[in-house]
Amino acid sequence: MLANSRVYNVVAPSKKLEKPLAAILNSTVAALYRCLYGRSLGREGAADIMVVDVKMMPMPDPSKASEEILSRLQDSLDAMGGRQIQPFLETAFAECSHWKIADTMADAPVVLPPELLSADRQQLDDAVLELIGVSKSTERVKLRDQLYRELAMFYRQIRILELQAMENRRRAQKGKAASPREVAREIFEALEPALIRRFPESFLPDGETLETIELPDGRAKLFDEHDFYDAKSLAVGTHKLALRHRAQAQLAKLYCDLHRPGFVQLPLSEKSCVLMQKNWGKYYAEMQTVFRRFAAERTEDEDRLETIIAELNRLLTSPISS
View 1 (cartoon, one colour):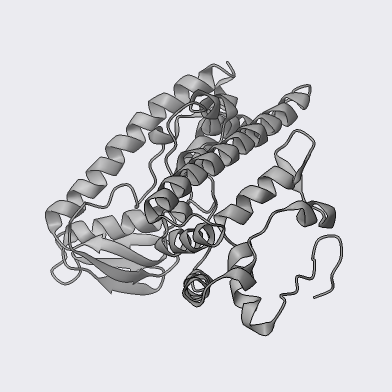
View 2: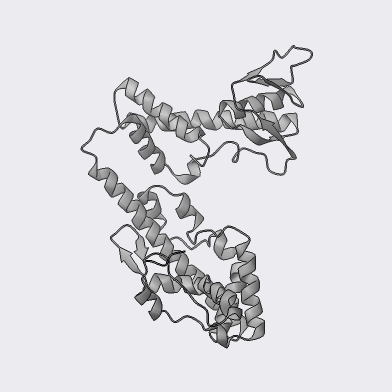
C-alpha cells in the first residue's frame, strides 16, 4: 500500500506489539478519539483526519500492557477479524431515510447498534480501559456503557445532518419538474419506517418449520388444481418444481411474481403457506390506499398519479438491497 493523504503507515515498536496496537486502534476508545480530534467537512456529516490530528490523540501504550491484557487484545482482534464490522449507527437511524422522521427521534433513548453489543468488541474495549488504568471491572463496565451511549449519540447527530443535506439538495432542484419516479421515491422515503414491510422477511411465520428450495428465474405458472399429477407443481420457465401441496406451490409462485429467485424459504404446513399469502395480500392492499392518498397530494393528473403509484409499488416489492 502506498502511504498518502488517505492511507498512512502505522508502525509498532516491535513485532510482538503489532497485533495489540492494531487492536487498540480498532477499539471504541480510538473511535471516540477520532470523533474528538478529527475535522468536519462542510455540513453533511463528512469528516477527515490528518497526521497532525492523530499525533494529538492520547492512545494507550501496548508496551505497558501485562501479558494477560496483551492476550485479551489479540484474542479480541482475532475474533473481530473473522466477521464483518458493522456501523456504530443505531439501526432505527440507519433505516430512516427522511430527516423529519429522524429529527423526531433525536431525543429518544439510545438503542445500541449490533456492533456495540458484540461480545468481542466489548472484550476488546474492556482490555483497553484496563490498560489506561481502570482497574475495577465494575467501573470498566460503567465507563464502557457511557462510552457506547456517547458514541451512538454522536453518530445519530451525524446521520441527521446527512439526511438534512440530502433534503436540501432535493429542494435546490425543485425548480425542475420532478419525474414520477422522483416523486415516488420522495413519498416512499418520508413514510414511517415501521410502515414498510418486506416480502418475505416480514411475513415468514415465527417458530414455523421452514424448508429451503431453489427457484429458477423466470415466469411462473401454476398447473390446473384438478390436474392429478401436477396440481402441487409449479412451472418456472422450462423447469417444473414439485412442491409439498398446492398452497406451497401458490406461495412459490408469489416469490417468482415478486422477483425473488434463488434459494428461498417456504413453510412446511399448508396453513402457514396460506396465511403468509393472505397477510401479504392484505398488507399490499392497505398500502395501495396509503400510496394513493400521498400521490393525490402531489398531482391531479390521473395518468401521472397512476405512474407514481406504480413506482411506489416497485419500491415496496423490490428486494431490500434495491
